Image 1 (cartoon, rainbow, N blue to C red):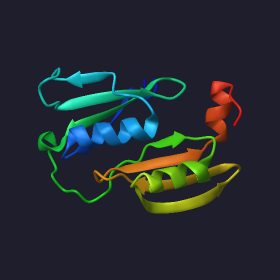
Image 2: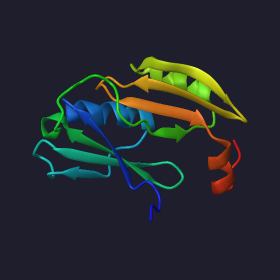
Image 3: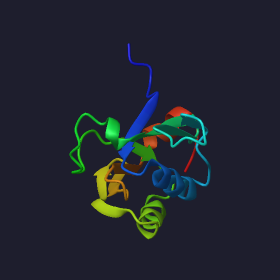
Length: 136
């Protein structure tokens, strides 16, 4: 039934600023924008990671719930250097939401809030490495 994550979406009041912030953080530009330039996008998307997972941003004016309190489901992205990634996120303007926490068996997690109010989870995940055949 469920085959895998297709797209993770975040909301942003200023979608152009979100695109700049994440492009600088990730080192890539969004591959998709709607509508096309020169119009201001209502949606844009990056493809990142080993599986080119989709990270999308929606203009918050389309959000059913206008609450800007961080919350909801948290997607965790596997990273090889959790401490370094957490430091880079904070240096880039994210704020710590949940500190680095050891969960046991090599699973470690942390959460930050990006400048647009979205919770971004990062983790060391031995299962991810096993499934993808990668090593950290």
